[in-house]
Length: 99
Image (cartoon, rainbow, N blue to C red; front, top):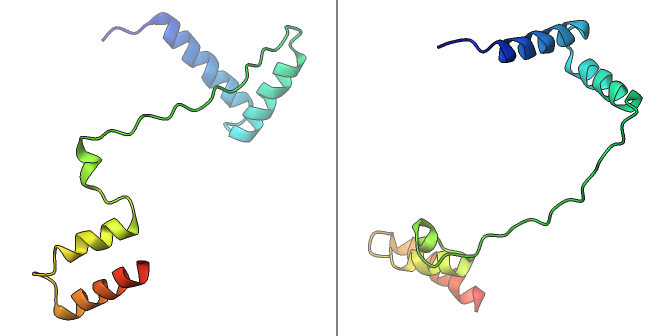
């Protein structure tokens, strides 16, 4: 793979700048903030964008995941054949408490 001379130059500048701060990230951050404050050009700040919430899908991998404790307990009731009688009674008791 060929080396890009622009990328090499940017990496060299970055390495030299980090070496000036003894490779200390906090010192590097402070130096960059100080340099930013000394820059006469105006700073631009944009308001935060509202978070996008994806619509709930009705199909896919997550459709079989119980969403509430009651759904989880109801799912446990279908596994009574493999569970012990004591476990089944505990689940039945918890379902009764939820009503």
